Image (cartoon, rainbow, N blue to C red):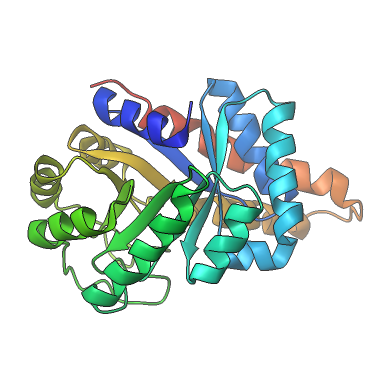
Amino acid sequence: MTLQEKLKQCQLEKTALLATNFYNFETLHAVLTAASEVNSSVLLQLTKSSIDYMGLEMAVAMARQGLADYNLTGWVHLDHGNSINLVQQCLDAGFDSVMIDASEKPLEENIETTQKVVEIARKYGANVEAELGFIAKLGQEQDMAYTTVDEATRFVTETGIDALAIAIGSAHGFYKSAPHLNISRLQEIHHAIPTVLVLHGGSGIPHLMIQEAIRNGISKVNLATEIKDNFMRSLKEILLHSTEIDLRKVFPEANQTVENLLIEKYKMVSFLS
């Protein structure tokens, strides 16, 4: 099954695919272990920062070997690709899916850049995701400027993308106040276009709120911040009370917290309404 087919299946069933970022062996292991525990498909996401840290070929090889070792159905996705050059490198390395993020550019430039990526990706049969509207990144203030129906309709018509991340009140990173998703705007966009809709900034949003978004058109939920935050919080706590110098003994204990988190997140997105 291609990723495009899986996302369309989720859209039809009113479930969602949990898209999880990984940063090293430990976080990859946590994702795979949790997915195996609940028998879930896996979408492994890599940002430019993670690719720079691990190396492109190494990161892809780790992901592919992990999926094979755990006998999981899964795909590898570029998250928030910031250039056509990076997209090309990832496609050449075997990514199943790429996101081009030109959302902070003027609409015309976002459309033009995304069109180029779609044209390139079609030769590989790869899924293409883009972002429309302002979804605050770490350190930015969320201004509640939601994606409009007219812009979403024009964007998907002119670009031909497979999946669209929309601004409905979520934000990347930590929330300074309780998040609130604009479900009515989500409904309007979902009814206006057939394109798979994506929720970025899934960390920190209550499960019931995410499930309401899934019932109303979200078919892919991104999770990143909570993964690295839980790992680091757990690791720091362990190190405060340990004299152990063998990281092979310390890291697995810290990873258990992430596995427990992810098991609940996979269950969250797979409910049937």
